[in-house]
Length: 136
Image (cartoon, rainbow, N blue to C red; front, side):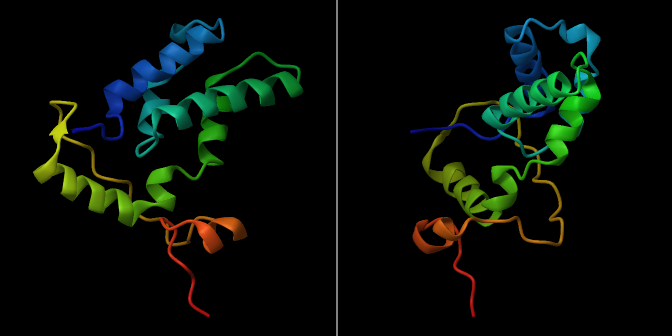
């Protein structure tokens, strides 16, 4: 069994470049390094969505896509590493013993907790075994 952890900063940079190119944008026109720095704990899919959302927002405002548009989309996103932090930490511990790590690089620590709980949908709280139930 292979375990694929969250991407490191250098991998996040490459993922962002890939998705910018897929949207016919030149990655050299963006501060990809700062976006990667601001996206600790984000998955590749979450980075892809941030590029897409930034593009939609820029288009709605009648502007070309800029680094700030993607950064704003990242700030509005609750990454899986926030919503399922405990489960991810448990999975990392499990994988160290029982799985082969897909990457040679050490995983980055998860970002510090923001203090508030990430929002969850009522359906998630009712049916999702991965989301802790809130006590009344």
